[in-house]
Length: 275
Image 1 (cartoon, one colour):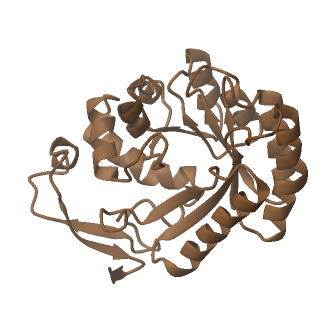
Image 2 (cartoon, helix red, strand yellow; image 1 turned 180 degrees about the vertical axis):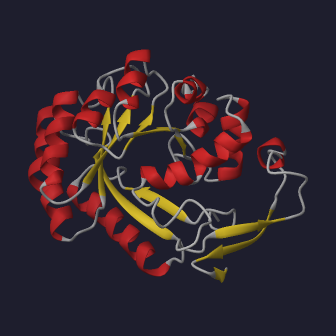
Image 3 (tube, rainbow, N blue to C red; image 1 turned 60 degrees about the vertical axis):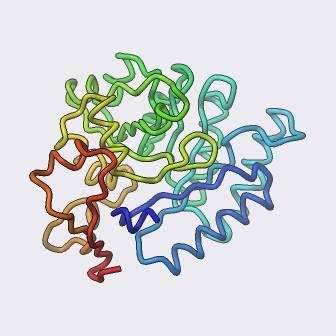
């Protein structure tokens, strides 16, 4: 479905198992998708999405660090590691411990940060060289300044705010401060049951107040950068992978976010082939 709506590069996370067996099962399914689907897939271990049922906070962090991460690492199931560093979930110190354990297995860090409150996720992400910090609905001016001096990409997820009726991220403020910003779907069964990036780009304009060109840039080259794939994906350029889609006749690129329910994708090309 997301391929036929124009997505050619996707990050898929675990995080709904919250025990070793189910987290591994999800990551093995992601590996199968990597091997069989025509689009580019990056895999993320998100065992620290919440505390698993039947565990104390301390015991669950120990499980993630001492059992889950080594098992994921041995099978090379994850490109990235992610932690929900937020109020009521995992602390910055717990997050740092998980990131350091995953680093030994070559998993690059990402952070769920500032969805519910400004809780130190941005700081720990920047300190550990995270590719991206995601959500950011509750981020502060100080965190914007911190990100501006880093290599970490802030990623906003307006579909989550739309579905849960939450505040939206400060994308306009970030762009005006000189930050590059990525936009993504956060497609998941719990908070954003839609992977339609055209609608997400529309939300980025309507609710985040980005200009159409800014929103499309955020959903393409900046999103590829947040996945560590901007060298090969995210724009149409000589030497890059031939991923693109051909639209129905439209008056301008601004029409893509403007006509927020109109289907505009006519044909999709992935790796040089029409799918």
